[in-house]
Image (tube, rainbow, N blue to C red):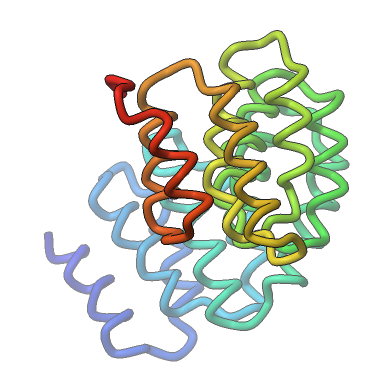
Length: 231
């Protein structure tokens, strides 16, 4: 408990040069110490430490891996190093053949959401192992722009894998409203396509929720057609 409190105090006080101290205890046998050290790196690490943080995320046990991945993303954003970090992860990904580590790097790239990662993620979505495709589809569903929208439509319309198609559809529903390159009417047409692909009530409700926020006659008129739908 004392060690955890000391680690937390480093972050609270923004102690200079504390990153090295945190890295010395991040492999502790005590799970609480490990978690406290990882959480503190988010506040204390500099952009120069990102390479070490990426390696840390790749070797962490599964119970803390997500926390370490999040720490990389938070640090990159806090230090204005998203592009640099994205390029570092891409290089490591291309040199790595360990499936679990590649999945971890894809989650980091998804969290960073930089455009430089899109070519790699698109290629992996076409040719990669299934677990990697799942990570990409989940990341694309939370992308801050509509850039992955065509990729999601392609998967939703063509994939024979039900899980892939469902994840892609969920991403489509979230990203349509972000597509500023098309008109509101064109966005509505995309929602209609999504509705045609929606086989579950949950996805239909998501679409209805998006339509209800649009407040346009065309959107309301379309939604009214499903007034008797139990979804």
